[in-house]
Amino acid sequence: MRLHDYKYSNRNEFKNFLIKELDLSVYQQDKLKTNDIIFDSKYTVMEKTGKVNSNALWRLSILLYPIYIVLLFLYCIVKYVFTGKFAIGSERLLNIHTTWNKKIGI
Image 1 (tube, rainbow, N blue to C red):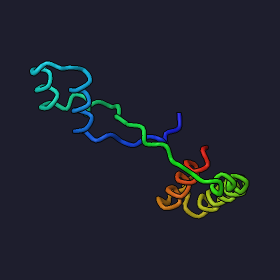
Image 2 (spheres, helix red, strand yellow; image 1 turned 135 degrees about the horizontal axis):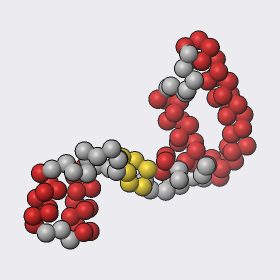
Image 3 (tube, rainbow, N blue to C red; image 1 turned 45 degrees about the vertical axis):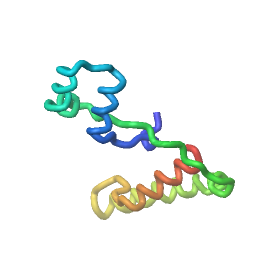
Image 4 (cartoon, rainbow, N blue to C red; image 1 turned 30 degrees about the horizontal axis):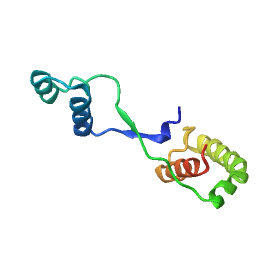
């Protein structure tokens, strides 16, 4: 399962979805609206995002992907040496990585 194809679901949208799809009674709808039964649990509710369209240029960039992965790994090693954390750590770099993976279909 590719987790970057999913996003966190909105509480109200999910409650409305449950009410509509499960045909809940009035009492059950009231309980669902007043108590956060689902959202107090340790599980998170996610919904699938739409498919990303990409053109041929994005698909051809897969040839550069192994070089990118090696550079990313080297970046993580250098960052570990200086900070002690072995992770990407940058939200901007993570967004670039996720967007590129979606575009090339990985």
